[in-house]
Image (cartoon, rainbow, N blue to C red; front, side, top):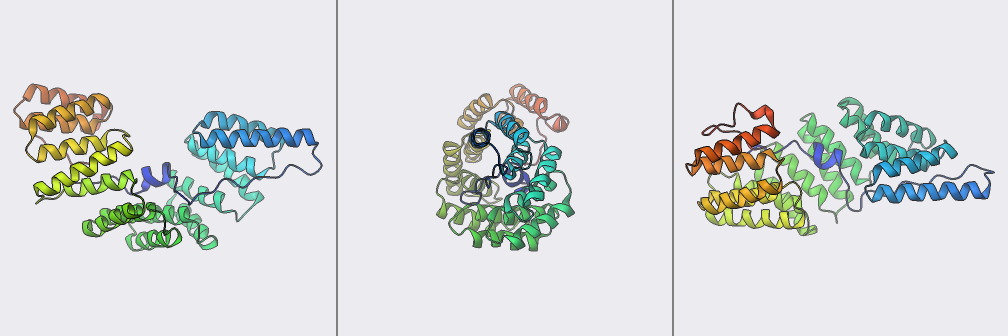
Length: 331
């Protein structure tokens, strides 16, 4: 079983929010001599922008920060807010422009330094990303998020020794956070070091028993074993179910639970369960594909073909492989 690219991107670069690792933007100061009413309005806009940002209302946050920028174009907090908001909106080029303006105000501030490296990662500028994140960790070795995204940069370049080293530095910087252990586990998975990966996922759960992705990874590890036992499949199913209960997400955890049931030989129940998950998450082609595999194995060729066709509808690149009897590597 092939797992998705490391932290790369989904878990770290694109959406990462590490517990205890990421502070709020450093507030800017009103311009010297600004009228009290203007300063109050500016602070109000910045506060509103930050609250909307933290609530996930990124378009509204952008509007608030942009209004604040029109009042105080040199305010560091406003510039950083615009950079962070554009990053969340996937406007990487615009975010890079804003983060450069923030860095012009405070060249060694940790948040814009790390954000600039992360933006370079998203833009595929690996050399620039690595250099920026190395500089961030050198200047701010206590900043866990810098180490995590540096590990991501090294992993994308398949520089595994440095990726492992960076992830271990992240662990040292945040010993009470399970996310760095999870990240290291993903790095070991990319090297097919399954035992080491399992140790790290378990370490993540010892620190954070609510870490949904760590449960999911353990379930995937066990389900993917060549010589898996029924007891291990039952454990994998429990882990997958726990992950789904914590964070239902896109249905992958519930799908893994149903797949474990199938591998235990309980095909009819697995088909029913997988069908429900597919209907709950109709755009997740992996679930439809797994449903097709179960139905095909049960001899339900027409139903299997419909499931494969639905999978292909949402992932056209697999159209030629999603036919009964064919195989496709799990991602």
